[in-house]
Image 1 (cartoon, one colour):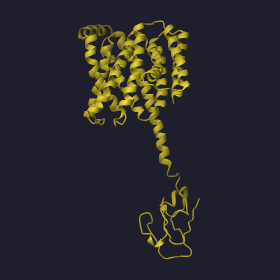
Image 2: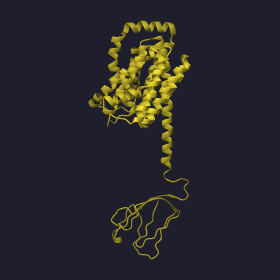
Image 3: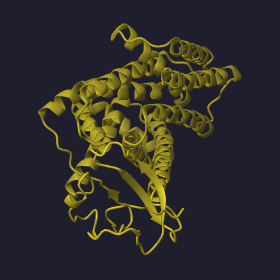
Image 4: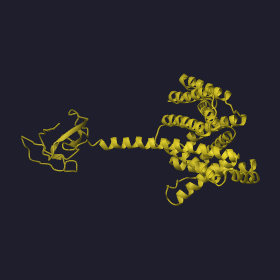
Length: 392
């Protein structure tokens, strides 16, 4: 659309997107960047001169009866010979953001699947979950210290108050991490993740009875398939083990408290997701190391290490390194994705991640699954998805 403007007092030359200010006294108008050229001579036929016609895309605050307002017309325009309007870069940035989130999700799921495979291989040959958990945290902490020292990653600015608020989060994270590893050392990976899909039930119960929060009825109803599916999967599990089952349940409870402490303590903290998880790993490592030594100890580790090397060979060292590196990477990517997406999207992504881990572990380890057991797993995962929708 070609726009023409008539004015009885002044004739400005407009370039691009300008704002025209109108005052009661025309002689008081001064030259400025907004009106680059003014002609003080009065003319009966004023003309708007410009090198190229303008397409008007937006008009705001057009009120001739209120001269006291600063802005009379705000005009966003683009030249006639341009192929796209000025909003196009925003559209491109939105598309780039969606691609970035998709890459985060794909990387998160792939790293998690690889970690669970190598972690189970290590635990089958070296059944010492406390040391395995410690090595995972130690590897991630070392990787981040090197990244900060070489300036690959920006060093976080922390203070005593930051570490003080992080401490209860680290305690809960440590308990949840060790409990999950203990569970996977006793039962199949798929069974551990089926039980861990019941975490929303713990979240609602803790929030309701300890924090006094209330939820709509749809949230409580979504817990029925979660609890029922987990119970059905546990009853029909061929290789059921009570320690493995309790480890997964304790892990659920610990991670619920981790999320609660994290939400309460980290409000207003300007630390990126990647650095936040790095600090969490380091503090968890300090908490876990003395307990790992007390529970298992160097003598048991040395004997188990020799046995694993004699049975597996040098590949066992690679398995240890792989499970430690991939554990840190998949958690780091998940925390980085939280900077880009909403909690609901993250919850849905976490549900899909659990499905990929369950299916891939069953295929790789040839885990025997009864139809009723598979039905229970499907119901539990579906309940988790319904919970994320109802919670929103």
